Length: 359
Picture 1: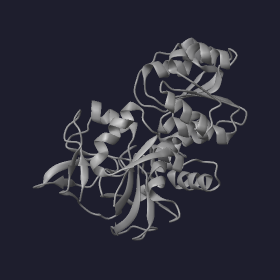
Picture 2 (picture 1 turned 45 degrees about the horizontal axis):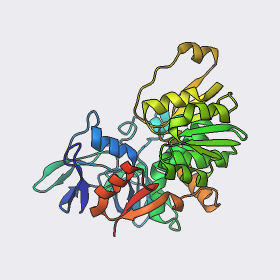
Picture 3 (picture 1 turned 90 degrees about the horizontal axis):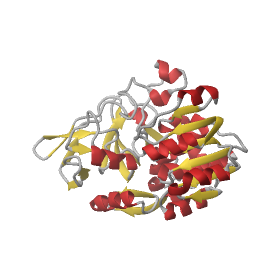
């Protein structure tokens, strides 16, 4: 099959047509992909590498497609089913799962692993490492619990973005923070995840939703998705104090993964408020006196704290009702050969979500 391979970190993708993947083994399924989204976390992986990751590498973790093969013991799925792939897989029976933290399940390989990856290779059996869903390819093999069946009336190129950016952003609001009607919200970063935080805050009934981003076009997008105000990050301190009348915000979300954004997020949170860290990267120091005396809450949000078997259907129902924008998130569709151009556009802040579509 054809796939986009990262031959080395800090290198462009190479398109190969001689990629193979084993399976499906017992408990796994083979999925022919219809669409695979481009995500900022994969930009960081390409540019910086990741501890334990090895090249050549096949990545991609936001995808949807059709089941074309079943390993033994798989129940609840059949060939021809349309599925959204989840980069987080839960066993359903470990302590994390039964305590309501299925997104933190370690039984199937740990957060982000989607089960133990099957063996992959290309050329004359040269080892090819797969990370998470390995979805930048025409087909992939994943644990059956990572394939969530959906109705066929949901376009697969639109359904793909549910698998990462929508679940991560919306879940941070609904599940992690549990934003209440009338709350005030500020969101640092208006990329794919940030825009979904914004529209979830709108659905939750927030009275004030302030979007912060250095890119003017993304601030315009934020207003279309439900922000009440959008400002540049260079004037964030004084502007946020003025907007909140010096009180700070009930909920502040960080979705960039930068030290300056982390500091600004915590600084913008009111006494007794909650700062929710969604982006990965950056470091920040926090005054312990403020944590205690002001009861400031700083929490992380991984994959929207979501149980995907509940979350994916809920997100689709919100889309059907017209409350959740999905089609508007997909601003460009490209072929696999253009994946390097797609990631270049993502680095430049162009568009919202680009998806690779497969014939």
